[in-house]
Length: 435
Image (cartoon, rainbow, N blue to C red; front, side, top):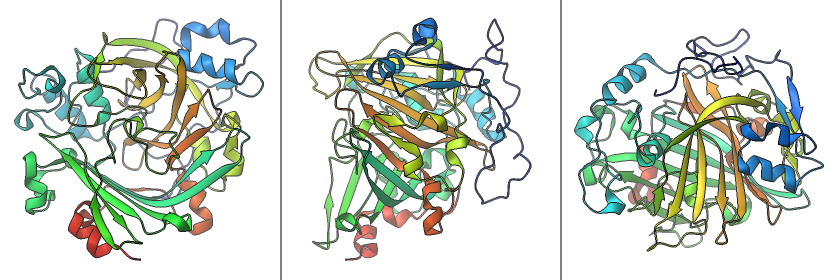
């Protein structure tokens, strides 16, 4: 995976010994996820009064939350649990990739690390021993959450006073890069530009004004730009939607509080690399981890939502090593956040926290991702996140929080099921769309 097996010098980060290899007692396949660490006690709590004592283990974004919300933001620190685990094939392929995977040769700087040579890669970590920020970003953007997942998801946009507007939709995400070639349809649409790497579709269910709207699309081995199409019920038409997945265009359903490229904290998007990355670094930070407490059935948005940030009583923080990837926009490009960082968990390549700075290089948005090991599948994915605007006091959470759907009779995400490929094609959206 590219992580360090050993713990740190003082033992506050333990050695990795395989992660969660079997579901905990009481777990029923297909049901909600039992918290394997429910008996862990809080080691200590960081507050606005004492956070400077721990500043060397707090990101600038986290420190900014203490400054912005001194009376309400706290961090409960739990024992560090290196719970990450993956299928055997994924480890084996990652070892092979370490000395084989390579980018397609390209002399143009903005394309130099934007396309992987398909013949040099097997489904695993792409660059387990990353030498550049671009390699690390590729690992992170295309980190492993199985070959597919489908879920009824719930998102929220929260106003500064803590009131919120919620939404419900169906998420369909596929990772063709993690699939054997025989599992990808023998369809000319999925053979373009070397075939798809990542595909996604979202179908709106609520609120009524957006119900029935849906999009679908893929990027490809030779073109990272998301080729997306949008079905609009009122028009009964499918239109090309170049803004979906495009750099700093608004994230779907976010009321402008997320950019398209802030998926998974910060992900590669678009046809060219707009950012120049600094030297790749690693550090030890208190970050959200093992968010099983947030994932229990019966929790509502009223339980989770607080002005400015999510309820700290539902957030578990642990000390972990993370890759630190920092980028500044190249002179010829303009982005809402010219300077940003993502902190990527060493054991999973999943983003755990990040920062976006505005045009004056002032802290603007702080992102936290609340991830768990979906141990029935041996993969890591987020249960929810929070994109917090520390200037306006508003924030947004992506479509996730699957347990909110208990009232609707819904369950947790289904990973590695049969992909519904038709939702990724304009012809499929036209056929499946309803008024």
